[in-house]
Length: 151
Image (cartoon, rainbow, N blue to C red; front, side):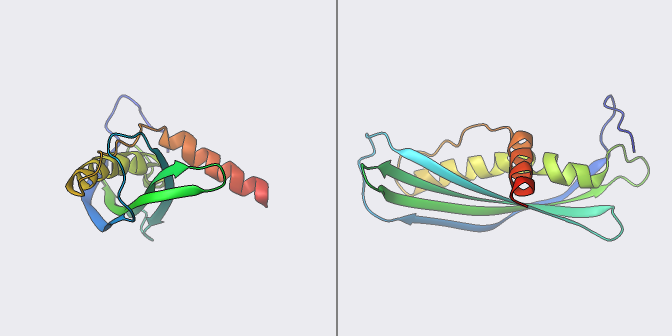
């Protein structure tokens, strides 16, 4: 299917839901001091048999760390997992759902993850976590190429 970029993609949001959330303060730390954030991302997709419904999940783990000379010191760990369920507009699909799930859905879910971590860190009484804006498409492509190169 060739997408007409001037038109709506014909994808509907069925629901977006937070599946998991966890905050763990391991040891107290000075909120005025600058710490590093280490983030790990996990992407998953599921396309239904009829190819008109599907879902994507995005799991993110963030550690607040201080890198020492020999090892890293972890002060806090924040985790969350979001689910997005989507369907195609059967009357006028303009984009393959598989393509949408692979890239666009994760970019959409990432905005929810960023907002969640900022609010969760504030509720935990620590300096707000502001996850950077990232190029999800480039990240997914990089993960795919690394996986292919390992084979």
